Every structure is written in C-alpha cells, then in structure tokens.
Length: 334
Picture 1 (cartoon, rainbow, N blue to C red):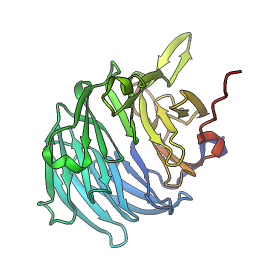
Picture 2 (tube, rainbow, N blue to C red):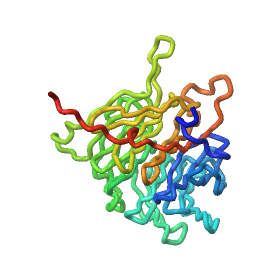
Picture 3 (tube, one colour):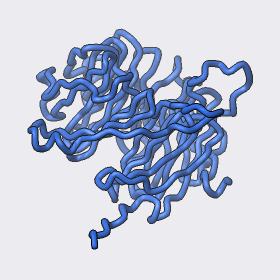
C-alpha cells in the first residue's frame, strides 16, 4: 500500500496538520504547519530540513520563495521566517486567530484572513509593525482562502464568498460578493484562471466561474464526493482540501473519508482515486512541476474524539503518474 499512498516523511508533526505547501520552484521542498506550534521543512525525499517553533498552534503557512515563508495561527500574529539565516520576525497581528495565509507574488506581499472578520495585506519590505498596508472588513470569520491569476477568493461564516482583485486590495472592497452555492459551511477554496472550486462540510464541491454574465454562469455546477456506504447508510464526509494541478488544470480533493480523488472539472469526470489513507485527508498540495502530491493524513475530528486513539499524524509525498492527472480527450459521438 505504501507505493500507492506515497512515502511518509520522517519526523512528522506531533499534532494535527493544518497545511502542506510545496516551494514555488523545482526544488520541491515541502512546508508543513501544525497544531503542535511548528512549521516543518522537508526535502522532496521527506527528510527533515528544519523545525521552526512558534508560540501557539498554527493554522496556515505559505512560501514566499525558496527557504522564506510565513505562518499564522492562534497567537493572531503573522510571522516571516528565513530558513537560511534562522531569522524570524513578526509583521503584525490580527485581533483574533489567523486562519488563512497566502503569498501574492504579483504584489510582493502576503495576505491573511482571520477569525476577527478581516482580510489584511502585509508588505514585508516595510519595517515590522508598519507593514499592514491594507485591511478589508469581512462579513464573518474567515474559513478559507484561494488565490490565483490576480484574484483572491475568501469564504467566510454565513456562506459568504468574496472575490477581490489582487491589484486593488487597498480599496478594501470586494469586486464581487456572493453566497455559496452549497447549503452548508465552506471548508476549502482553490482558485484558477476562470473561477474557483469550493468544498463544504457536506461532501460536495461547487465549480464556480468569475464572469458574472448569465451566459458564463450557466457553466457552473456542483457535485457530490467523499461519501460511502457504511452499514447500509450514506456516510457523508467534509471536503477538507482542494488543489489544482499546475500543468493540466485538473484538481484533487481530499476528504474526511481518507480518500484523495483527482477530477477533470471541464469534462466532469473522476480520473483517479487514492484510498484509503489512515485517517482524514486534511491538506493537499501539488509540486510546482506537478510531479509530486503531498497529502496530510491527520484526523479532523469529524466523529469527535471517537472514544479511542486515532492514527498518528502523517504526511505523505506521492509521485503522480501522468495518466492520473492528465484530462482524457473527449470521444466524439458516432
């Protein structure tokens, strides 16, 4: 089974994994944040290359460049770490825990979204405590954030979804304000050039488009996933993670059922399935070249404490076969 699931990294976090991220270059270094208050750096083989301790559990992390990254969590602070020099400093803070962290290369800045219902832009080139260059009020606690091709998509409590133009964040206003197409709480968001995929706690994914015109909106749809029959009943699991393949534009979803599915969104087809991981799939990430998939297998408390021991937290690095992630050509009708 190990060759299917991938190779487990050595010395994984000791508490729940909140995010896995590959470096934006071909070196394929992996960043992992955790409830144990650490950010851990691994090389592509899964060997540890550094552990960076913070004062509280971390909910997200993001690379700026090779060896430089950001993290945020329950201490409400956004921190920048340079692994080469071991320099770590705090840019500033939210009034409540930071849920989402995303580096915006087109701005040379990092954006955070928090449980204080704000979205904040930070310029690390400015002195610490003065680099919060923009703040936008959100309609509720931030639950998920996705960025891509000049757009920023934020999902909040109350099923609100806000789409921002990255170049206009200083205005503090969303370009679009929407209500989620799904009936239940937003769990994750991943953006691409034409729109975004949104996963919810009810085992569904909504495929949305940015273009608000009626013609374009006809292309949106939603589908069920991460469900299975258990004892004669339909068990529904949250969609915890969505990650787009950087080459083919297909995407992977990870759920509370311990399953990873790869989808062709344009043709509405499932291409591949990897199952089962030992416990919930908490986070996913493709490497910059699309050759590797990182999978965090970390219990997300879908069934509460469960009355017993849960599988230990683990992170797997898996090689992706081209057939697993490449869209299949449509077959013309006879």
